[in-house]
Length: 233
Image 1: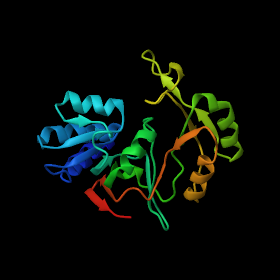
Image 2: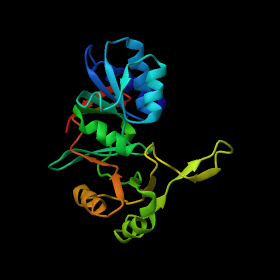
Image 3: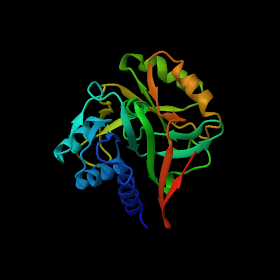
Image 4: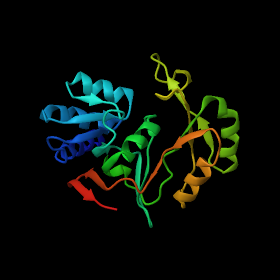
């Protein structure tokens, strides 16, 4: 089974957790996009809140009822992918999210949901977080303050660059989030104490949010060679 096949399989399974009348949070990224398309095809009577402009536009284009959190501040379920998933002692699941650049809105929407189902292929399930670079969203003005302080923590931050529409290797300046902020991708290596790392990052003035989602996910649907497994914290 290819990674793309696994993503589609888990997206189809995730749709089974959505019922008529629900208010559903829509994630961002490749697996979430597949989920949105599958969900739209079910024709359920639901209302949705998206975690990015891209997901909002996609859902609306597929005829789904999409609103903002100001209109629907309480969600029944949030369904989204992750870049890494690990069990963290005392916390349940720890995730790294934000590879698609929507970590701030993703965390806000996830926090408004009664349950958060993370969907992923088996390659995203790890013993210890940190192989995938940890995204940190930063106010533009604060970049020269935040970047050296993250470096002093040993997190090896690098400013994310936007891809241009030309050659695959071409760049078009710093990547900007939907909120107009920069992202610093931190090549942390092993994150043995995610809570401590999260607290140290949040203590830096100018940091908007980080991609450590700790104790938020209530269920992981993980697709592999033997189908989709339900993994609990």
